[in-house]
Image (cartoon, rainbow, N blue to C red; front, top):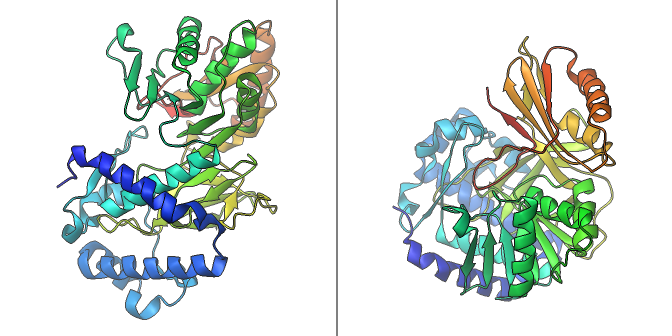
Length: 435
């Protein structure tokens, strides 16, 4: 049912070829040309899902929608019912096109929200996926087999397995679960020894390294050309600390295990571009004009199409664009999950996005933060303070600011030692709900 693992590297090579021959310049295409291509791909995926996936046919007919008759321009996508995350998880086996299952690849979400999800993707989609990744890395100056240190995707068996080397691609993996001062010092020395040119990882992992360098100016650092971050929210404060400490520009990336849409930051570092050949992006309204819901449809996955999929993520937008010559739609940043909410004892919900701006004002006091809802009555606030910062002072300020947002309805406890909670392969989400 799934693609043989030994053939996956072949698709990666095809992805590199796709990038060289097609994707490298696609972001400079005229908006009309891009719209035409997206319309044709959407028409095909809508019609195929109507013909071959009973779940979608029923869904369309309930909405009085027939893609052959009713989808005549991109704006007509609004006639298609939105697929919620909960609906997709409850019906994931019904969203598969059995005619396209052969040779498909299988991916799973980490299930950090308690709802793991299995996605099947078509081989050509995976080629486009790799092509877009190559393009994003090329913006950072990366070329094939440049040496890269990666602080993610490695779960060591023990303390003797902290570093893993992929000689074929010149990738050097370092455990994101071991980021004490001693480990970071070891990692930096090894990166210098390996002569790595690029650093890739979760923003929280890279930030830990940057903070160590900032507080230990005597430490030597590799001569990084660029830093590639992905899979977690990257705030402006964190980005600035990383760039100043590691003396290299940050190129941020956004993607989903469900393979819906993909964004990447370019050389200017102010915005993230949608990869138009990868997914059709919709930015739908929220209660705040500065934030939009990310809804998307992958344009190349016929094995398990997720059509008008509500990702649950929120994009920060602004009227100005990136300023580079690329024509692809851009956003300011992906700030977090719409469904990340603190639930109070009266069952009212407070979006965690309310706290992102609040913590930005604490940049003089702390380097990182995390909120953990331990129960419906208790909230744990984990922060990592700068040296010489008064715990009592920060605790008092945070208590006042947090209670402005949630009142006195939760018992607040604090951890000032940075004992963060991790999920998946070392991701540190800004908010985790244990209850």
